[in-house]
Length: 364
Image (cartoon, rainbow, N blue to C red; front, side, top):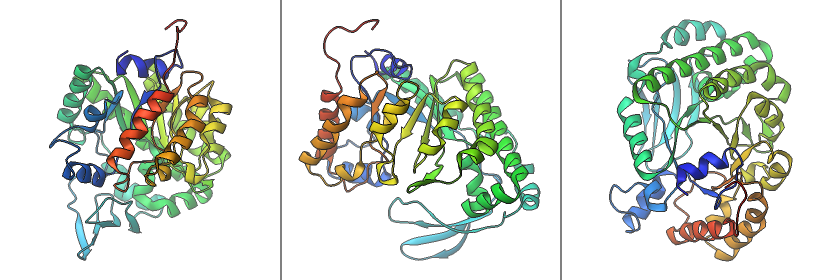
């Protein structure tokens, strides 16, 4: 089977020859493995490892596209700068990390309405048409399932006002949160329409939406249903209207939100972060009949670089989650540069060996 055929069937939980294969990496990992000679100069990791799908993130939803980042502080290791959302972050200069949140000019509905909302227009310059065109063509040439990727509303709101003010707004000014979510959802769909009309539709949609942290989601299920789910339903319905499956990524512990996410219409959940409290086997048991699953393999096992531990992790999970034909092998986060190339290669080979379906398959 081609990657396209395999993922198209896995997302419908239909019989396939083996589980799917995909991964995310920190940029430092690619650099290290290339420097060590494992990856050729300019080589695509999708090609190198033979992944079944590929993604392209072509949209820029920063509010003020004309704003030049203002550097406020710089050290040999870090840089503090204000961006076009009028938000200030500290970023590491030497390696990939999650940025530190420093300050946000937008803390209230009035500031949102003054500074941000008027700038959120569906302009062509928000779209990287060339990147999408090239990625879509390469996926077609290599037989991969191609997905447009980008962020949904939760991941668009907090870069503007920060988690703290956003979460306070959910409790104290829910109409503000609804307005932000609706505005961003409509903008994302308007941009998709512009892009797809010109360059063609993808095979699926992949939304990033980090709605949890360790052992907790950022909100209750009731609050999700009231404030976020309507925007999710809007964006997912648009994909489904065009017969496109939707994968939703969420780091953190989001299991309490899954009833609402399923109601919103997601077809697959990714990344199923173990250290945050997510349990791949439990989620497969409770939701595997309704959701395809991508991830849930503890990346801490991989950066132990201990093959016995890798074997134990895979052997405990793959034979179970392969049942129902709805699983794609992936770590529970992104692969850091502490994972040796040989360890990752072993993980892929061993995982696919365990995830291969033997014998005749009905309706394959």
